[in-house]
Length: 194
Image 1: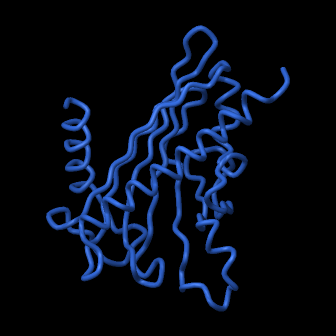
Image 2 (image 1 turned 45 degrees about the vertical axis):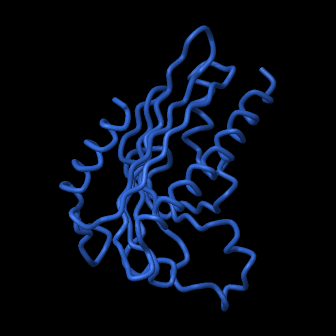
């Protein structure tokens, strides 16, 4: 229950602090839909080995295509353009307009902590989604093994076709994707010869 209260408090704090830096319309904290995700995975390698792969998102995230958009590689301020892998199978002329979102590294503490802000500006995914989220990766090493704790929280602007039920489904879909990706990271790191 403490974790749920913490996430709710974090959510409220985020709603209050959201700006429109990347989106052209406000997301009202009073009416915004929310999503959360939480997952832990242990990788049988020290944190410095895990970190070198974790920070290079495009090497282990397989559910989305990542393209570095701007900023210095592996540094605060780096921005990625993120497109769901399934969209790449659709001919470009038939894809919904703006079928992507962005992710920005806002905290980078090598071997310990990586925080990314995601944003889908107004009009993203054919106008069906406007959102902002924060995805937090914490690394903790014990006896040569590293546990990654993933926490995510986000807000989505409601639309006539997007309710909390759909936001909850998006949350589960995002969690499912991150589990697939983190298991891939584990496989990559653990299968590397020392």
